[in-house]
Length: 320
Image 1 (cartoon, one colour):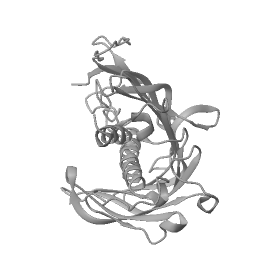
Image 2 (tube, helix red, strand yellow; image 1 turned 60 degrees about the vertical axis):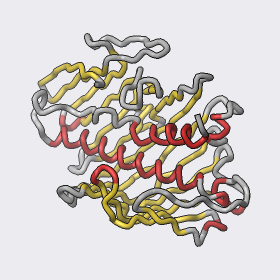
Image 3 (cartoon, rainbow, N blue to C red; image 1 turned 135 degrees about the vertical axis):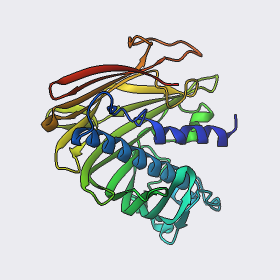
């Protein structure tokens, strides 16, 4: 496995983890209403936020002045629809500009994301443990080309290299894991002009690599609000209703089973004012019982227990 291959496998995880099957109620199970929209909105926002962080990770790796790899020339950007303004790179700032061209998955992106390494003048570089990258969304819009539906992000997040090091150190087994976190408050998310939600996203990912080159990722919620801990996201919906999304048990996936098929973990979404609770348990058998998988084994799927007002239900959903 090449360095390029392991990097591609690793960065794709951030795009998929916690989106999972949307973890939202189905119309045949719970009548579609504002509560269902709130959970769907949260999953969509998390997914697009992850996709943007994926671009950030890839781009930072290509620019030595930001990454700290040395003074060699930057590699050529290969992300479709994206150009990088490096005028401020010598001061720790670059800007990702999206051109609005339709690319993979029938999506087009416009707007910008500005990246700034905090304390750059004091010697901080992305590969250092504890380095914080300020991520500013400037009218960053993702539009579905087929029907022009869009989601737009504005606000600030911090991306932190918790463990220090890079994918190269993980690949060469010179450090045991690679860990990073995404945190931010009051990220403004507009859904197709029909309403704006306010999200507080607090998540951490830790990667390990076995001697057989199986990559494992563990995702956690690291936020807290009103006495509730382990929150990956919380805030207000587009209708102004408070909600929480809690990772009650860390979500784990590996490259044997795929990022769409977590081997364990639990995610609980609540919109109290709507009487909605979605309890998603990952890594179960066909009966909905949690299983412990061994080497080269995968779970059947995940179980959804839902409550919507006086109504309740359970559904076991296969990964394939």
